[in-house]
Structure formats: structure tokens, C-alpha cells
Image (cartoon, rainbow, N blue to C red; front, side, top):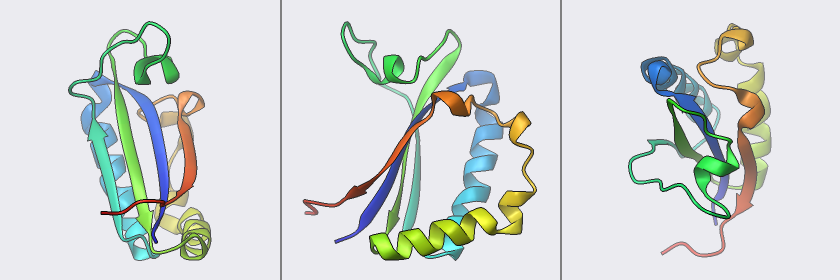
Length: 118
């Protein structure tokens, strides 16, 4: 079964085009290093919650939207090797982390074993 890296973050609406460019560039790097697919999703129907919600989880501020994304890998082993290679890839090394179009401190991420694929 595939292995999935998932992440949720908050991006200022004014930075949407910059985020899309960053997402496209990084997707190419991950695919070049073994990812099967990279999916980036901009909030469309993401309600605020009373106890929990995606906006609350990433401390979404006024003028920001939630982005929900994942990278699918053939296995955890391929992910570990591919992720390391992607982080060392010169295309990612050239990024100025101080100028990212989102606040990385509010990003939630993790790796997941697939348990159902239909």
C-alpha cells in the first residue's frame, strides 16, 4: 500500500499565486525523487468550528485560507530516500526560507500508512 505525507497550512490570500508557483516547483522535485503524485488543495468549503476545525488547527488569521495537501509515495522506504534526496536537491536549496508565502510555524504535517485504498 502507498505511503502518504500529509500537511495542512494557512496561506494569506494575497500570496496565493506565489504559493501555487512554490507548490508546482516543489511537486516537480518530489516527483523526480519517486513521489507518485502531489496534490495541493485551496480551501473552498472549510467551516470554522466551535471546538476543532482546520482553520483553528493552523491558527488561520483574517485574510488567510487553509491549504490541505499530500504527497503519495509507493512505500515508506521510497519516501524516506526520496524525501532526503528532495531536501538536498538544488532546486529546493535555492529557496529563501525567510520569504515563503506562508508561516511554516503553523504548518501541520506527518507521514501516514495507507489502511484503506478503494
